Length: 311
Image (cartoon, rainbow, N blue to C red; front, side, top):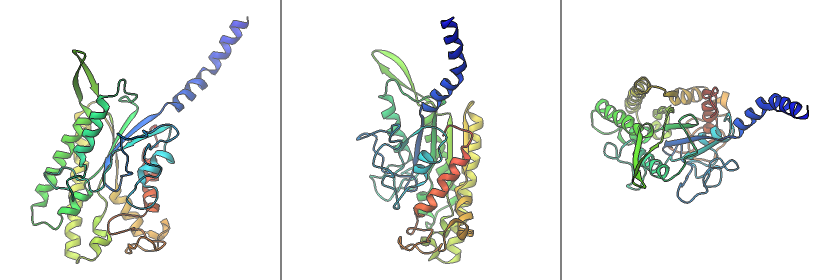
């Protein structure tokens, strides 16, 4: 009878035990991008993300582009829906591809550099703690590509088409298997990307950098951004339809920035043109980057977008 009672009690508690176990298991987030995303994470030096330190190194909130938390910080630690460990490969100045739009310096890790870094490191992990179902991959890039090229005398439609084509070629590396030879046998090391979050380019034509330009220049950049974002959205749809089992989310950063810039007082700002980095109430910290308070707003919205996921 004692055994029967214990068994019945265990069965009654089983749903709670399983739920608690599921909540304690980490989910993984691999992020790629530029200074809007960077926290200075170094996968080689460590420490790596852990339950007590979800962003790994450096010390939270990391080496962000502006003082304080950024969107990926708070999406990981405040607006997450379970325990999330984030490997953030975002690098300041990154572009989609250095042979299309070179970054400002050779040492900058572009999108393929960031992906290659993860792939190389992942192949050395046996076994990998992440799977297709518990890993999210996010990409927020294109800001520097446009910022560095909008004033060039080039065919911007053709340039954008090149960027988007290359963008999704690189993303394939997160999806497809990679074969290696280990102990004379072939093993499958699959990043297994099935969950993807894409973020588009915000209205750079409203940054302090562009506000000093004339209306013709600003309108031209706005058109370039609109076309890039339209092609990115179309590319995401094609990417999803071409790969069975892939889930995608798109965060409209352009609309989010526009909402805040059009109604700053609703979000705690009273200045959308200044960029001295010290005056309270400013949306912009410098010529290109929003202050931490704005980044927190966008991180919260990303969390809301992912409301039905573990991330």
